[in-house]
Image 1 (spheres, rainbow, N blue to C red):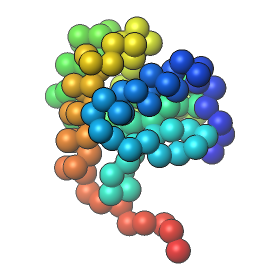
Image 2 (cartoon, one colour):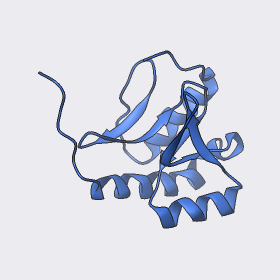
Image 3 (cartoon, rainbow, N blue to C red):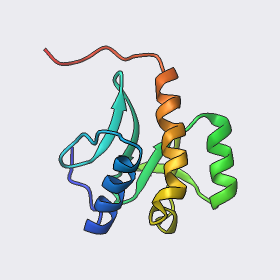
Length: 116
């Protein structure tokens, strides 16, 4: 994976967000969270944070924050929303959606491990 173009501030805010809800950050070059082989948040190569939400929560998030879909490597990431920069700075407010993302990840079908 290519190294993220995220600023140090964005990387720190993402780390703070995960810490605020007790989640483990994975990935050295491109930080992310995952459960059972399903990624549910990440810092995109393009430098922004994206989270995965249920359809209902995703639509609420888009409407409330005028957010758009997450686009990485030129492709729209289904189920993910692009977290606006100003919202990323409001850790407590965003943490509610991070909790919803984590809960949604629990409902996803586990993916088999590719590690040998």
